[in-house]
Amino acid sequence: MAVKLCGFVPSNATFRALVSLFEKDIDVEFVKVHMADGEHKTPEFLARNPFGQVPVLEDGDITIFESRAITQYVAHTYTDKGTDLMMKDPKKLAIQSVWMEVESQKFDLPSHKLTIELYFNVLRRGREADEALIAEFEKKLVDVLDVYEQRLMESKYLGGDSYTLVDLHHLPNLHYMMATRVKRLFEARPHVCAWAADILSRPAWMKIVSILTSEGYV
Image (cartoon, rainbow, N blue to C red; front, side):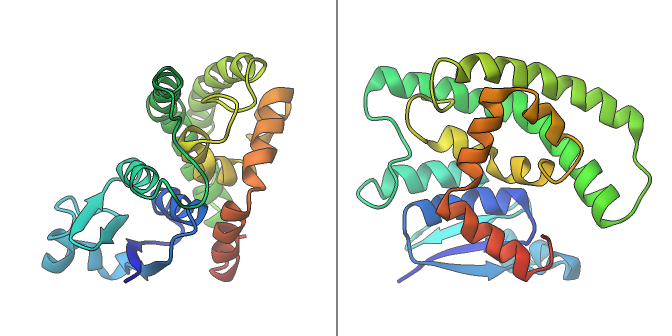
């Protein structure tokens, strides 16, 4: 029976979970949640995720929500399939864990704020840019990218010398930001720029781009 992922296009959290399944070559049934109709607030959906948010993964008798929890479940459960997304050596895994925390605690907030403002509000909805908000979160993002540039001078990927969940977790926000003026912040840092181009060109992410294209988001 296929793994089922309930999500919403163009939710970055949904795509974070979905791309992990694609990296593992797992047969997945993608079930669209119609959030505009309030489907995520129905009793049936709340039984899966009491917070009424996407994505939700169902795999046999287990149901998991929160995108990063889903990706870790996928990586640990399907170790024999597809791309190895977790380090095996305990010390390397510890380093990977550090950078996974950096993504969730340092990168996610400014990148998410800039994605919502510049991609969805300005580019998609045609609203006037909130320049004060953009300046605030560009500064926060610059601080993170400066650290990333130094890190990527030492290793090819953020978690080490191979592509892992650390890099995968960046993909949705990174994809949207590269369609906005924030792209210049990545291009100004050669190692960050090369890393971004590398992970955004992965076949698993290209499947996500195909979904976005079919839904009119590219």
